[in-house]
Image (cartoon, rainbow, N blue to C red; front, side, top):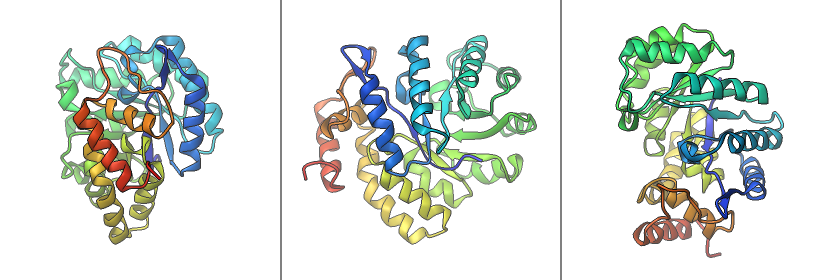
Amino acid sequence: MFYGSLTALVTPFKGNMLDEKALRAFVRWQLNEGTHGLVPCGTTGEAPVLSEGERRRITEICIEEAAGNIPVIVGAGSNVTDKSCAMAAKAKVLGADAVLVASPYYNKPSQEGLYAHFAAIAEIGIPVILYNIPGRSVVDISLQTLQRLAQLEMVVGIKDATTDIGRVADQRAIGGAEFSHLSGDDFTALGFAAHGGQGCISVTSNVAPKLCAQLQNALREKDFTRACTINDALQPLHHALFADASPAPAKFALRVMGMMENELRLPLTPANESAQSAVKQALEALELWGK
């Protein structure tokens, strides 16, 4: 089972090239801060603009640095089933622990199409975590479709970014005890856990990995008083990191913290001044910057 604070890793660039040195140092820092898992090559990592070679190197570096101590879950989402299958196969060969696969975007497939898409990827033989994000993909993985998919041996969990935490209980009834239920939204991670979720694939943990890990540790220990205290402290950062198109605010924060360049690839652009101000205030409040 996958659980805890799983960082949806940003991808550091320098001169429009993958910054391998910064990535390696960033992953080591995540490990030292207590992160429970790494999720490279997802939308937070600007996956649509990564080349096949860059995806390979990012995956290799994460697996090398994790050294089996925490899982590496590689993004393999596409609106082309064959492409998702190819990415999943490559992740399997490289030694990833699982793949994260978003619902096909833009195509707007039927529920039968969604089932066939995910079932084809599951046949690759690497554990699959479904990613339900109807706000971006336009389609929602229904409970009925999830029930069918959960019967497939290699479908082992779901990242839920519907923001409907009431669905967690229904999904738990479908998936069973070993099925991983992961929040895809930092804002709802606390409530998601209270409804039975086991963790969060987090954007905020790029910037505050120790606090995010501590939050998930408290939730696993059923210490909701401590969890609420940590979550209250993180809330301004949650808001700041989505004050502009993600991951622009996160990359600005990491530049301020000296982790990497504030560089994105088009069509994304650096965070606007308002978002930058919000990020700086949140970092100062958490003593992550300006010491």
